[in-house]
Image (tube, rainbow, N blue to C red; front, side, top):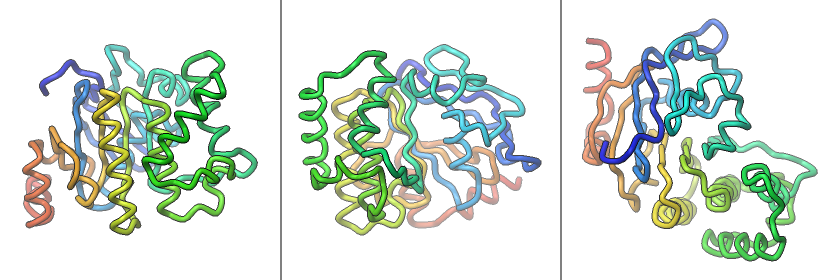
Length: 252
């Protein structure tokens, strides 16, 4: 890690109900760094994202999570969001009765603790939507209601660009998208990398979204444990050879 630590996950054990999913995960993400968490399906990748953001379904049974020097292990979701942690969902929820624009504006006002000037907000929203090639009418539609899979993922990236989190966790953001949608989502992520000096943790078992991005570190999660750490070249190895080597390492 080159930069000051922003997120520190220390020997983290997480369970859902009676099932243990993460078994002593260590992970450090520095400011301005882009980390990729890869691994086979069902190995605990999404669980780590939910644990970091404070989803109450996921119980930390031991270990801890430190964000910018503060132990946040016991903090609720909203307090973590205020500190600048954002999660883009694998399957974004539909929210009838709340427009996309109103949802983002409310989230921004909660984060900043002050009212936003409507004109400034609308201009920033319009610019971000144009970059993602989103029709402006989506701003006034109920959040994710009737959105295609691609539009839902773009709406998630739009929220990230508007909220400017200090740490953005993207969970399988490229799943189910066609080539053009992946390109636009990648463009939004690239813009965040470039302009917001935020840290990224990209959770994926595919590599399509990574083609246009600069990756600092790659971590391979197998059976709830980190089996390997490396740089961007690990992504290429997985592309060619899959996870077999890492699964054997995890069993050893």
